[in-house]
Length: 205
Image (cartoon, rainbow, N blue to C red; front, side):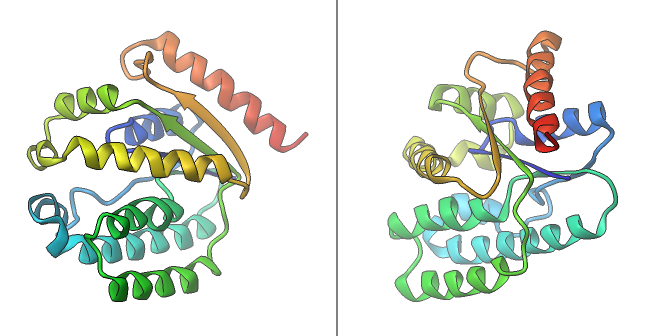
């Protein structure tokens, strides 16, 4: 199976991917954040680096999607290629950070790639309000993330909700994390595992 974890910046995707991979003995595939050569520059000057950043992420995610088909057993992926196009690139375009020419070039590349990508069997969406996201950003302490504006986070949440409302590529599990701490609280994590169990077993029913 291919499981994917989606959600806004600092929603807990990487942490949940790690914990579920360990719990189920799945193979995790993580988003390449620390190796991204554009991310810090992007938060300093979004308009200058938006297109470069999105192309980097798109290429990285496409390679990840190809790798999931080559790995044995169940794979759990931190973020999907769909989020790159339908949420992050779309938001940057709507905000005027990406030009018409670059955006349509990007969409052409995405459309070519998506024909070769199989959607996940189960998509787990971590839903969080802005105060929760801000708290998580402050907690993990990445210097460049402190440059993120609240308007940017809020716009991403709007695009995420729009995408999730229309999602029809496979099974979908929505987990509201506003009142959860699945990293430190074993009961919160257990409640997530229980819900994932129901969805997984339902895949074969």
